[in-house]
Image 1 (spheres, rainbow, N blue to C red):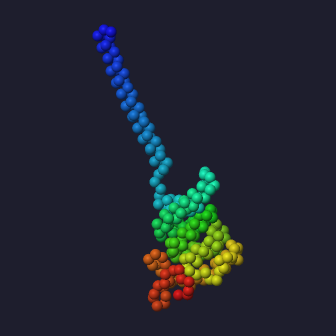
Image 2: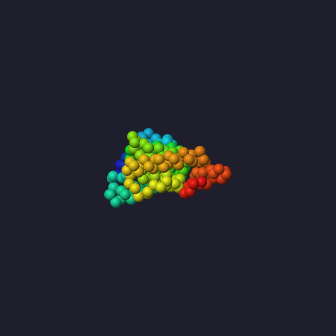
Image 3: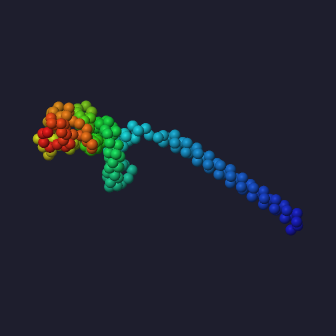
Length: 216
């Protein structure tokens, strides 16, 4: 091989090396550009939730069901999601109450049941009043009377002679409505906020924390 041939081969090697480098750079630029476009599309489709949307999503998860996994796993995972949603709602405290009250009328009865349960742990006058209203509402979807009664009894400590073993029938619901509407009339003006919940102010000025199982 002559010296001229060696020089020619060196030129071609240099050419292909440069061409390879250019191709690699162009490919890298292409992938980076594609990644940027994908990121923009993802961000556009996953806009940051508003606070209201986030709260409503947590409320929805109180009745979450999974249909794309096995039945046994579905029950376990649904329970986990509900527990996680409940934990986050409890962490929100009173900020979650308006959304829980709204969720009492959710078309999915599990959501309403979950909302009634969480309201027990964030006791407010608004929550008590909303639960009592549920006992008198016929048109909107509401939790089962037994769920509402259980929540009201847990918050207030008052059962009003209601039998916890009775079924969810209209007569039972009406009796519970009368019992708790009377309790509300007796104590709504004496309910005061205290650290960790509500209390009833007695005539002597002292405050008894709810739940109270006797007449203060």
